[in-house]
Image 1: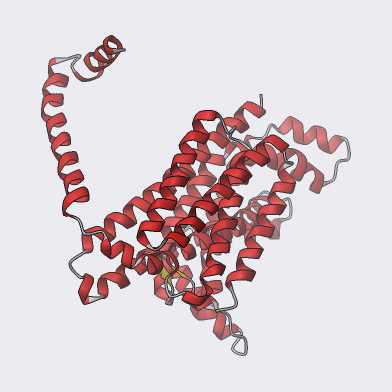
Image 2: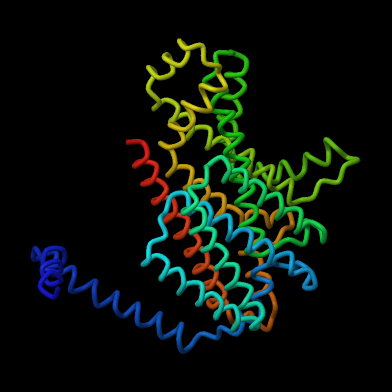
Length: 377
């Protein structure tokens, strides 16, 4: 083992004189940077500000006496993610061991930050996700049934969270729920736009093309703000919550990019298969649903997952319409004079959470891509 490590070091770090000199300069600098950061995290940083403001970071200004609704949503999201993971990732012994450690660590961290009851709820939600992961994989659940379950879960989240009002949603919960809902809407609308752009109907093709090119030419913040302003003007007698208007802006904007991804996948489908299906008098609906779209979406999985990450990271823009997303919640905490000197702690915590969520989504994307590639052989 030691010999293999030494060979790797020599081949990758000291193979040439220039590589050796560069390694002798960079490695000590990196080691010093890691040591300095670790020392600050473990010794100098005051993480009490994160623990004392944990509720604001997670749920914003959501009423404290209604937090059971938020916990229900967290458990539902974990179950949906676990079920989705079970469709493509086999829960092996090593993976389950790592996940068990993560579940335990999550419970301990939440218990330290808030209380033991919240820690138990957090660990239970994560454990529910693991159970869904194993259950779906072993039962070989049909993908269409799993999609129906996903839609039902999203609807349940909105139904449970909505009684206190959409305007009080906030924190990380708002960012995650918005990402899930907008991702579903953009995929559906984007597929329709992609099919419309390749339609034989001239008017439909021109409208779809004009919409896609228009949305790709303007910034996201403009679309969100424009939808937020124009909806009350078009329906002055109807009160549409700012959250729904923001979701509509996100969906309308990102659907144009999803349409382009799907269109590239549609062009990758062999023309011979389409002609053969048409020669069998297959309807357009059956042709697209059973033959074209499954192959097209399989090709563009990495791009679609990257789009989900863009939506999650772009959710910070909802602050312009008065909503408190995860980043805005951290800024609200720093606005308190008592916490004004804890900027590094708050932003390092925000960075760590964003990095963790992005890493999990990227890992799931790679496994899903591998699973789909194996299934297409």
